[in-house]
Image (cartoon, rainbow, N blue to C red; front, side):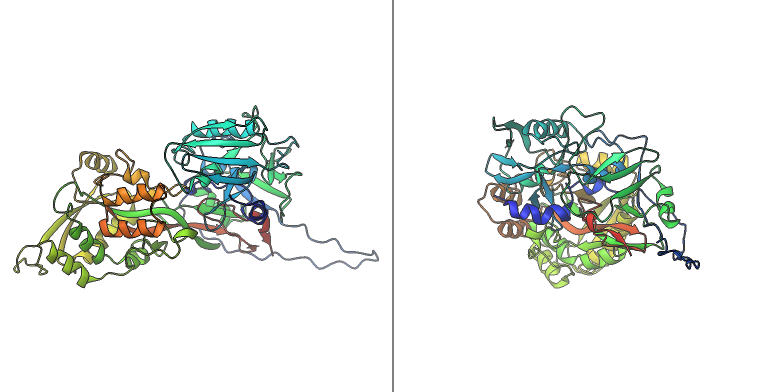
Length: 512
């Protein structure tokens, strides 16, 4: 049970609800530079009056798309989806450790087959009407049918509302200890789908110019009573708008593999996006766990993060990101290479040649499949060739167009492949362990790691026990967790975006 006092602690910080980082921020690449000019206040003219007019307060300005809806269930642009956390709240919201806390709910409890949420008695929409269980249930059904929340709600099969109007029970298709995070979908007032009414810190207005104005019924602190919105198409123009001072904040998840150049203040934002080596454990030689262990031990994850991803990634030492609070202390494998261990594992598997000329017995040769459309991953592939060669493993890179890459994965025509998956807020690995899962290519879905994961979800293993079982089996090889990029006006302070909310903590964002 998540207590009401923790909700008060996190509501002011989280602001509203968590969204998938893939839905976050304005969009991509450019090359322009802009030197920030300091704002100069003019000297006051001599006057016999009692006071001098103070400079107008700077307005926080964000981008949005006027051609897209602000309904979170049907919005198509990342900029408008990012604004959802400012307009709506979920029953839960993820804190900065990616842990769900009650938001519109006063409490949330998780059992093997369901999640129960009790609405706060004082929960109201921006129009002053109460948030009811019927509103939350209708929003769940809209979210469930929306591609924007499909991954978040893949394990939630239905909802029922009690007669008290405040209690909802969500049914699960299988046990999930992290299911409270699934309730972070936005709740809108039933019947307002064309112009959604929410309970978030702001309300969308379009009197004169588009803006977000403070929700009079929101109880959290807000440093900015009004946020201006500027209409920008997604693309190069958004960061140019930041460089010119037209907007105040820009977020890019860097999924394109390109890092925009900016002279604005900028920080890396750890994402829940795992770059991994997929292994074809359904055929030799990678059906042998010792060979998979050898490949993993020969990899320097730190070097990959620093070089192939230009420092915009963190080494993966477990199947979960260390940004997730429950996984902070978990370690399944080393961040740096261990060639001695790699060679020992190869010898155990019958590969005793570590000479490039193959003059010393049996050697291991593998093909690494990668899509040629992403510069991060092609750079990682070339670096992996160098790293694995130190253990006597010969790797040939097959960089192919994405359509061919997908076709070969589906046909099982690969030894190794470079992949990436963005885990949802409830940290589900089912896309990797389920038969037919989106990233289950080559994985033995009936293997030891998959069985241990089921036991973890059923409450039969701890998280640490599952991570150890995963490290022993290595059905796929985690490499690094990618970062996104947040760039913002150098006068803006308190900027703390997260993987699930680009505008996390916006109540404290202010201009110095």
